Image (cartoon, rainbow, N blue to C red; front, side, top):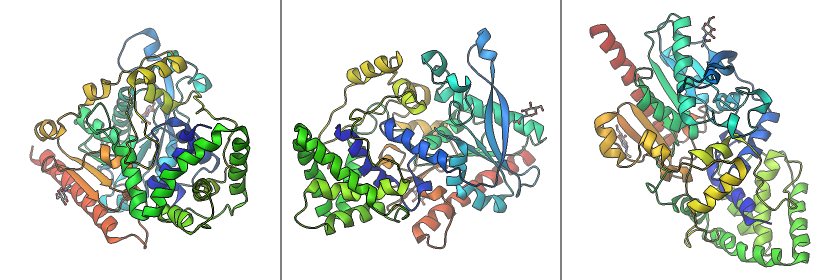
Length: 470
Ligand SMILES: *[C@@H]1O[C@H](CO)[C@@H](O)[C@H](O)[C@H]1NC(C)=O
Ligand SMILES: *[C@@H]1O[C@H](CO)[C@@H](O)[C@H](O)[C@H]1NC(C)=O
């Protein structure tokens, strides 16, 4: 069994918080990502939006005959609070069904009445129902070749213009919102299409997780730190469990034993919601497990907390040791432009691992017949010396992050200028600020959201002032 699959369980805990809605939207490796999205599909969220389909152009950047092929891009609208001429808040969809992101971004619905805003959620091409080649969309590099972030941004731009025209609201200011990969898209959209969006709120957007901008070990170091903060014993048990796992996997008998250990998690209660602080909850299980137990069995027991929450049929597929590289959208994106090298240092609770561009490229070639372009994102969108660059050339972007989220290390954590600001909380997890407000929200979260609202209000006020006195 490849420890890598097991390894992701631990990650999940650090990135998720109260509910399944807060599941991380992407992972360093795509296997878990896709399995989560499958889960998501089975339980479509109920959301107050109307679904529309927009005839979208296949290729915005060339004029080949095929470029003009049309596909139907899904978007969701809520106009319940909108006053004509008022702002339009657009969520730039990530790698998954758009309903899922709409359900996870209650924040936009919460603030819509205050702004009399129209809410729009646009699905990312090649996800959900927005499949340019129907069920053949993931067939090969020939079709998947149209899946990249630049095409996605252009889709958003074209759709927004069309929508504004249809609503006779060309003067309405547009603010883009996004979390995780969607947050990267929101920030990049503001940089690339400043004439279409007056500002962007990018939550947990690791736009600096490319090239050598952020240390490659920072992600797993951050995960490990979360566990260490929860309990030093817990961190040590997990760190020590790898040796046991290796020893067991080395023998045939051991494998059977492993499978038995995994099976047991099936019998645990399966309807319990994921606790508010999953890392702490997982560590509690580890810390309180019977003292004679192996490290590995303690870690499995803790991991089952998550698996049972998702109510997966099989606890874990031990037979399928390798990460399965099925064709899926995020895998493709990771193999082409979204190259985010990650390693595990000896400080982390994971077995030390390195990253080799060559190995990575060989794998992508094998799976998709394409070579990654690891430096394309930073060429297209920048990232190096971002402070100096954006101080002069950008404006109106909020980067919100919580330091409990390991992705935060690859995001913008410092204020760049008066209008490119970083709102960082010590306790926040992966885009928690985007979730619906609840009575239980801590002060730091209430404050972070309040600042976001104030800043967006300022952008909008300035916009109206400019067009009225321009
Ligand atoms: C705007 O109207 C045109 C013509 O009816 C339609 O084809 C297009 O899909 C509409 N745009 C959006 C964003 O719905
Ligand atoms: C950035 O500036 C805002 C005020 O505009 C402040 O609240 C915030 O704490 C600053 N962020 C950082 C990371 O210092």
